[in-house]
Image (cartoon, rainbow over the protein chains, first blue to last red):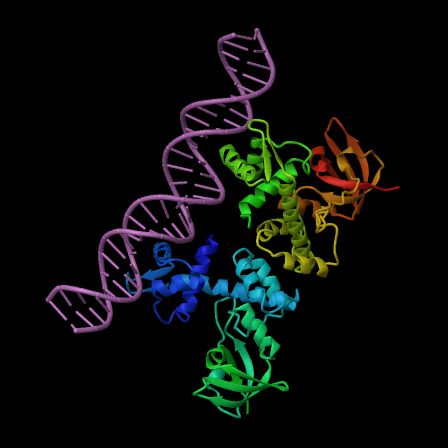
Length: 219
Length: 219
DNA sequence: CACTCCTTTTTGATTAATCAAAAATTATAC
DNA sequence: GTATAATTTTTGATTAATCAAAAAGGAGTG
């Protein structure tokens, strides 16, 4: 069996490579896992020896087919657990990421299958991220970044791609949760900001924050 | 935070000492955790240095107040998780022990509190073992060992004190689950066996097996 | 008291994961 | 085409947990 640490490296590699599209640098990997570059290098070697990654020294790493499959399964476990914690145990959506981070490494496939069933075979987690199927298929929707929307555009919030608890709390407090409908009032390139109508309040977000909110365009 | 390994040693010490009644020998501890005596000795030292256990070299270990409190909390987590897996996720009662063994080390107190609430603040786990309260109180019932019951005695199964999956499967298949009512038909000291009427079948158990079944006497 | 037996402790090695700091490599600049 | 900067890799140490095997300790027997 894989250690939690190995699973975390696999998951990070999956994310940083954009599901295997591009090579990942040692430095980026190290940063994303909060370890030193030396630690990343040595784990990369371990993964390569185990046939889970492909390493060209000084030119980055990429998961092998096998590594990618394992990584996708960790992501699947993570997202099913998150939804379970929110829907069944009624946890706050900003707290479940940290909890799932721990559970994903120890929960058996049997338990995941039962959670999946109890949840009605969901396809999206509480943050709007797709839940890969058992055979590792991601169903990606064609989404747009809120930061790129034009004035007057009405949109449906589809996904918050930031797991930071305080950002999630902030988003929720302004009605920016998956499923919510909002309208872009104004955008100001110079001020680097976009103003939205959400429920009956008006909020202005910087582009960096608006970047983390993905939407579906309406009408 | 404590490592899973430390938590497992604490739990084993709690059990082997009969909730702190008697000192535990290094050998017994090692055996119960499937490690060599040397490993046990070195962990005992670690626990003693951390103030979680009291070690008299060559004369056994005992948990300190602090160690005992921590151990009881691990047991509480374990048993709530077991009941959750059976009642909410509908797992088989013989499979939940192994799963809970993993989960007990990573599930947060918040999740345990939510499971506890969802289950209706239960006091017994699926095997009839008491679930300690948040403040560490065990409610022990006055139970009898089935092996000591007399002929003609009608009893209610209260607890199966064996977590072995195949034994649990066997017990269940003969109706020997907590809550079931059975009657002692015969006991035979020489044959080391006891014969029971359970549902509409008759089964004979050796005393060793009957020892693991605890009961409440009826009428 | 000495001898043996059994248990416990100690010692030295190993594995996974990490870090800090030194060395090597690649990329960039002039 | 050498020097400089940035990144990556290597090296050597550390920590937690373990094992195998050697050494030490306690208990019972004669």
